[in-house]
Length: 168
Image 1 (cartoon, one colour):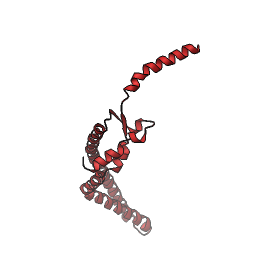
Image 2 (tube, rainbow, N blue to C red):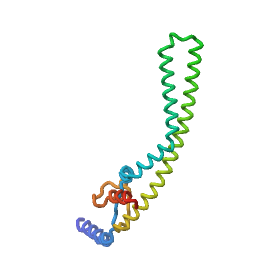
Image 3 (cartoon, one colour):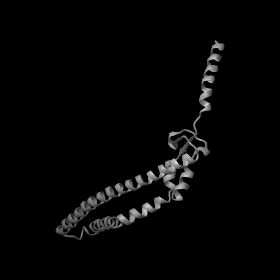
């Protein structure tokens, strides 16, 4: 029985030896860390802020007006006539619906633009990853999350960030 197991093990070792001789050079990239460290992120953030700044200010103003009305309603409700209460509540309802409408539209537009900019950035990152992989003669590049363990020298995330920072 032992001889049979030993022979089977030796056979497996002999079959595996040629595979080990052709082992591929593999690297990993931590995409989350790369995106977090990119200087382009700040530029995109500023660009989107300038693009949507007026609309954000408008939504903030509506929020402030609604909050002020709610405080007035709470503070002065005992002193107001029934007609004044109804008028204030109608104004609050109107502001609330306007805020919801503008807020939702702003959120959708902002998400869409962020997605567009992120896709542009992703294309740049992928191009740089390919370049770094070619320079390092890596045959396969995996995302960090797809691996359980990797040697630190196989992680090319820092090289990718450096290359992107230089404008490559």
